[in-house]
Length: 382
Image (cartoon, rainbow, N blue to C red; front, side, top):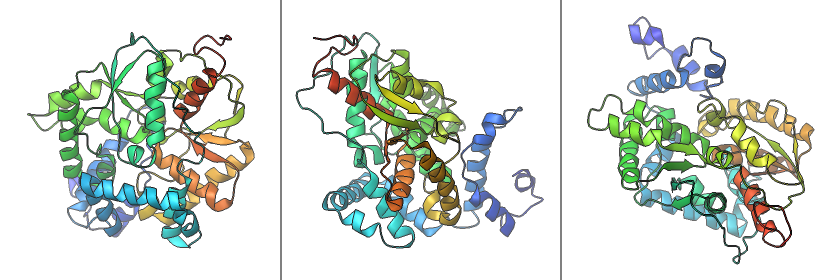
């Protein structure tokens, strides 16, 4: 990276492209670096430099173009839901190559969800403040139940939740891929959208999106018109686990299952959030939290890395799946859609009984079960 900046190494050098392209961008090196080198920022800047000399891979360009346009994104997500609902995605998951893997990712979404009881009305006094929810692209498109669970669990824990309009993609995929201008344009749109919602916090339930939004100030630091506004929005961003952990969270009903937690890289390494997701899971009565070896190691998703660098991604995923098999858990809980789908796809193709779930879905399940016989937050009988 330094040689590129100083001009002693050409951006067209094949070895440069190989090393930079194959990096997962998991940012685990930042966690252990004694000098605090912001490797993630440097990697994204270097990929943007390389993109000026070599085109971003075609599949990445197509995906980034779709995520820049809400109409195309809505259409793509609708098509995905149809394929999931009809079972076409599960059938096509048997195909070889990336198409089969992408279909396995799609078919894995929603596997561990539990039907929502329409009579369940979350209770809370709103004393903890107002929260604006980033609904997200993939989260709202394929994990709408998780967004609903996020709203309900926050309401139980005394937050008032709103969904600001005019939200767009957070820009994380674009920044990771070297499309820095696309990332900045999306960031500006979101800054404007969340400025119009004067909330105490901006809640994000996708680790990659949260990391991106927390870095809007840095992303737009060279834009005099937007840098202060971006920094102000970034300062309000919290992962959902941070908000729930700050509230306790309140206890609900029993959920008897073995759960292993896998830490999303952009939650653990980029945002440095480790305890809050575990606080959420440990608050659930009768839930057995089992250890997962190398839970702090990347699963190989890394945004769209699994589609542009499939060979390396598969090697990383295979190691993760081996550790999951040894854990013998009913579900793997993780707070990022890419991780949910990457691990989920691996489990689907392996024919495993284990599935993936977002931690807030398990807490939501606990609260719903509490309403059938106990008071949420007390653990006592009605």
